[in-house]
Length: 377
Ligand SMILES: [Fe+2]
Image 1 (tube, rainbow, N blue to C red):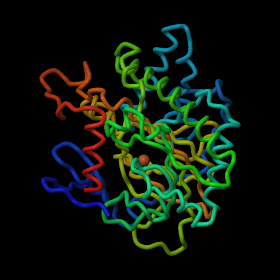
Image 2: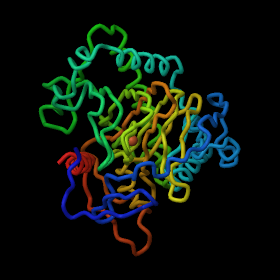
Image 3: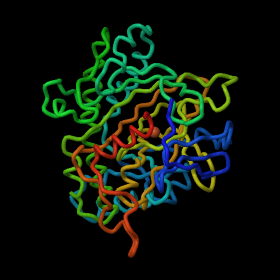
Image 4: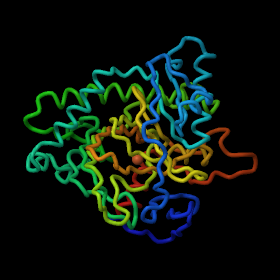
């Protein structure tokens, strides 16, 4: 269960949604049962071909999606103006909800499909086989977390999901592991799944590269040199998480859902989701809005580290999962948190004239340890 630290206060940020704050920093949120559970049409699918997707606000409006669609294929262009145009689209999304659909990402569709298939196969293994790689056995939070093993929303029942974590596979004698770096160490892999490890490792590598590309786009969006975050992207801390959400029961416990309302801690989250739907993003004006599946896309959102870096100019937004599809839901978030030693200090141009930085300077590792301690202390 999530403990409540001292020196905090609770504020209602939307009818039915109250969040815990320490100063300006928001952490766990509580959502009243059924608050804002009104739904918009779940299948607002827009047919999109990779590399040929629209990215402007009008196209997003036409699609009926609540989140902007950003085609990042231009980040690979040799033309600075084309890359800058993608940076502007990213900026608009970050200033809005801090959530966007990313298309034109270049990740192989076959690899994406194999990851989802391997995930579905893993979760059908007998419980004993999954528990053989239990996260409880890992010094660095890798492996299987059983259903109801996490409570992301303070005061809500445990999340209706099970998951599997992996990351950069480092042996115990790696200098970073020996130095006790946060969340560094070896993975655990399930027995009897010959394709599983190679699939996850190939996908992990591809997502590291995509995340670094997106950080270049983020730098452009902030009018920073394009390589501003290159140091941050070296030897980054990243986690790949496979998640299985069973269908929401017909009579759930009050407040019970797949994944409680929360903000992410790190820099970027890149979510691949199947076609079940269920992801919801909190909008100050509209309440909870659906982020339905969009073909060949990632849902990318900013974590608390970016909000801290940008003096809250960019948003880390509450989100949750309510799987009312009546079927199993599989999703695969990739959490990109960067090099643990990089400083996290208010970025140039992010504090308004006369405005002081809202957060004390820290490092990536310091920020993550702080968030972890606040949630699990
Ligand atoms: Fe999240």
